[in-house]
Length: 118
Length: 152
Image: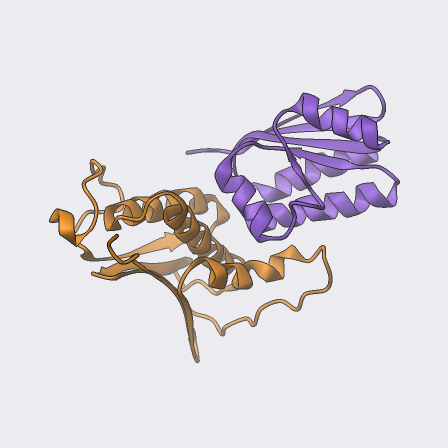
């Protein structure tokens, strides 16, 4: 069973990082939503959603990411997603997200992108 | 007919390789989100058995996941709290049908870019060849079918 697991941390510059692993489906999406909301409520302005260890993403998970994107933008910040798997990239492309939410290969890349955009 | 819990070694694919391309598997699952990961495993096994690889396989599994998720999310399980699945191959097409006891809930109206949930149906239609919905009083079936590519 690929149970979804989640970790979180803060980085300098008001960046919240959420680390997910396993399969991100309708069962797991509320957990991601809760942790993301927690980071934003705790004052993170930018968000890195590290899904490097996530092997499956469905449309409910995408919905959580899109809501997070909306909230982050309202606060004048940015959101970056980390994942390098072909099947996940394909889902993002299919849902037309690859521009609004480009996928980065590592947390380091994502943080660079966020700090450049700021 | 392999049971959902049997472990089968992967075999060469397709009728040309002498592999049975006809099978039907009926089973019931609790209408609980926690079963989705097992459903995806079962669908993936069936897709591999049928001979779908790479993109065809991941597309079929993704679409199947959407259909079963919808049934768990919006559908009505029977008195035992289960919904029925049928995975079937008829030689040229692999299909997954999801049956529940309720009226069909029409696709959610899209309220804007953040309402990704309502796009699950559109996605399914992109990923497989046919999405069939049969709604009768007290029973709804959603069936996805994907055809094998012609031999190269």
